[in-house]
Image 1 (cartoon, helix red, strand yellow):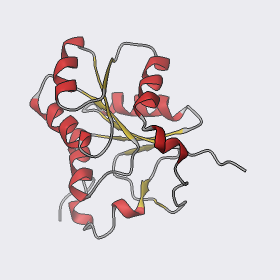
Image 2 (image 1 turned 120 degrees about the horizontal axis):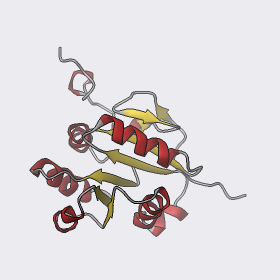
Image 3 (image 1 turned 90 degrees about the horizontal axis):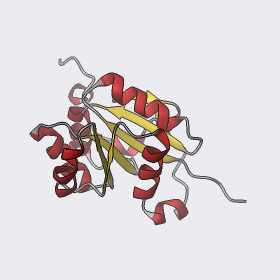
Image 4 (image 1 turned 90 degrees about the vertical axis):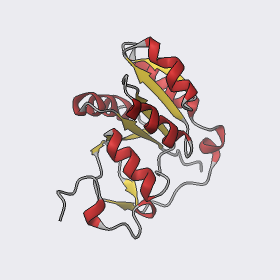
Amino acid sequence: MTTTQRLNVLVVDGDVRSRTATARMLASVDSIDALAVSPQQALQLIKWGSPTADVALVDVAPDARSTEVVQALANVLPVVATSLRASEAKRALAAGACAFIEKDGDAASLINAVLAATPATRLTDEPRANSRSEVEIGENVGQSHLDERSLEGRPTRNRPESNGG
């Protein structure tokens, strides 16, 4: 009996409405879970250790922070960059993104870009442990949660959702 693994996508966008809508769209695909986070939250996840996502979809804005996020994530997982501006493609690819897709494209193109960026070995790996954490880092969408291993030993007060203190 073959079990189907779910693809975990980290959606990074500075606009909460955009990242939530994109994550919901991705999560509407049966085999995809999506976690929507801000660029700051994505950097915090990297600081804590490698995100447990299989691929990241990162909005590239015309600021240096976007490039920093792409570079940091590309060191640990495949990154698909997206933007409303096609002119951002060169900068995103130079920062380490494996693909670029314009935001105003259709949903199927975006989904296909994310699936194409997923390492082929990911589709044949042993299934991940079913143990999941209910700790929300960003806006969890659909079935998405963080793997408990990504949060081990991390102090609660340093998590992005914390109000300090």
